[in-house]
Image (tube, rainbow, N blue to C red):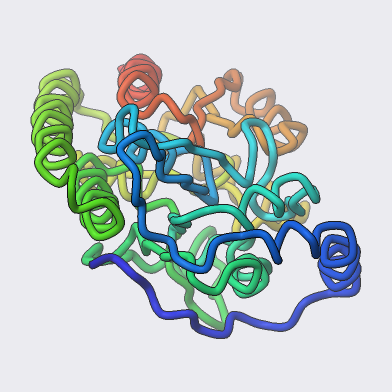
Length: 310
């Protein structure tokens, strides 16, 4: 069963503590009315699922089908590095049977996971990254050495890892609703076939590309690059704004690699990326690592990468 341990993840800030206190006062009656068991008992019951980020909702919807009701904590366009949930979202979590977390070091989860679990002690927690080999962020970039290493949290952008996510979700749904286990298994089988086909399709599209380097401002595409034998050149490190010295180093590397496109994430400022693009005579293009339309998004991103590397 994909039921993760409830591990301590760090202290809360004043804002987080205040929001928890406010929510507790406003919704105490809701908690008292919540059922003590998370088993799905009726044929008409839907499993109430909350995911931390939008990409994970894709897998819950595809495996769970009509038997799940899905809510997302970090909404489209919001930044998981800094997002704070609204009281209504915490009320939704207080009613959830299942919470699907990335489990890979996303800042939102590091700050909020223990508090969200505390809203409903019987809620099942699925660690979507179970069985995934997490990659370390590059420790050396543009002549700079990190004092510590951390895992790259964006594991879902590899189709192979997507299959593992789908399997983890299926195990959790079956544990909560064993009556419909065959249905979840069939949904999983169909999704796995689509993801395998997607990987083959992307491999074919990239097969004739000789220059296999692409530049992203935020280093979200490392798992994708590793899956398809590409080189991700990341401009920024750990979400920090580039210093003038680092900016010049990035520009020199981009010129040396023949880069003409700087890819940007919709949830991050593009100002420094646009400066880099101007200096190399190039352009910026958006690619979204947090899209909830997983298959369509990877196809779109692949097309953008292929065009930039030709």
